[in-house]
Length: 121
Length: 355
Image (cartoon, rainbow over the protein chains, first blue to last red):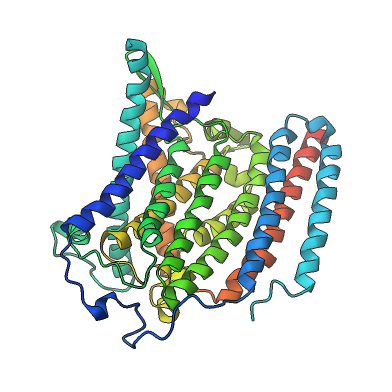
C-alpha cells in the first residue's frame, strides 16, 4: 500500500512551504539595522575570544557510537515483538532466542559500564 | 476524475484542518504555559492583550515576524538559516499518523479520522523524530558561538540517549498489542474487562504500567522539557543551541519543541489511554457520527491532560545535572526497559499457557 504515504508527501510539501515562508517573511518584514556589536557572537557582552569550533569532550563521540550500536539492536526487538503474539504457542522458544540475543547485548552493556564509559564526572 | 476527487478531497481537508489546529494549539500552549506558570507562582501572567490575555499568542507571532532578522557575521550562513526549518519540518510530519478519532460517515462514505493510516505507525514517528537532532546540532554548530556549540552537543547526546529508551519502552506495548499500526492499537483498547463488580477499560496503562512510566520519562527528555531541559540550561549556557537566533527563527525552534510535546502527548494517549475510546460510551447507543465526535473530544481531553502534565512537572521538579541525566538514561531507563520487555513476554506466555 504505497498510497498510505501520499498524505505524508502532501504534509511534507505543506510543512516545508510553511517553514520556508516563515524564514522569508521575517527576512522581508524585519528592519535591517546592522551594527558591529549586534553581529558579533554573543559572549555575555565581552569581546569574543577566538573561534568557537574547538575540540570538545570525546564523551560525546562515545555516546553517538553507543547510540548507533544499541539503537540498531533495539530495532531488532521490533519485528520480534510484532510476531510474538501470533506465535505464542512457541512463545518459550521465542523468549529464549531473544533472551540469548539480549544477553550478548547486555554483556557488551555491562562491559562499557565497567569501563566507565557511562561516567560523566 | 470524480472518484479521484472523492478520495483525495477529504484527505486534503483533514491535512489543512489538522495543520491549523496544531499550529493554533501550539500558539495557545505558549499562553497556557505562561498562565499556568504564573498561577503556580502566585502571579497573573499575561493579561493585557485581550480578555485574559487571549490575544497574546497573536501579538507574539506578529512581533516575531516584524523583528530584525539578525544573521551574525561569524555564522555559517546556509546551515544557520536552514537549521530552524530542519527542526520544524520533522515536528510537523510526526503527528499525522496518529488517529484522533474513529470513522465519520459523510454522504455514504467512511472517512477515518486520521491523516495517514501508515502500517509502520510507531516506527514512522520514531524515524521522523530522529531527524530533528540534525536541526538541533546544525543550529549549535553553525552559530559559531561557544554556548551554542555546547548546547548543541549536550542536546544531541541527550536526545539520542533518550531516543533509544523511548523506542525500547514501547516494545512491551507492542508485544501486548502485536501490531505497529496506531489505529489497530486503539481498536484493541476498546472494550472492558469485567473483574467482579469492577469494569476496567482495556487501556494499555493497565497492562504496561512500567512501560508507561519509562515512556513518560523518555518523552519528557526527548522534548527537552524540564526536568531535562539541559540544552537550554540558561544559568550555564545562556540559551543553548538557539543563543544566536532571533525573530521568527527563534520562534521556529519553540514551535518545533511544542509540536513535539503535542505529538508525545498524543502518542501517550494512543498507546496507554485508549486513544479516542470513551469507557461506557457504547452503552449510550449514540449514532455512529455522534460517538465518533465524542471520541475526538475524549482524545483531545486526554492529550490536553498530558500537555498540562508537561507544564505541571516543569514547576514541580528541579533540573537534573548533566551526569545525572545521562546515567538516568543509560543506567536506569535502559535496563528497566529491557526488563520490561522480557517481563511482558514472559507474562504473555505464562498467561497463554496456564489460563
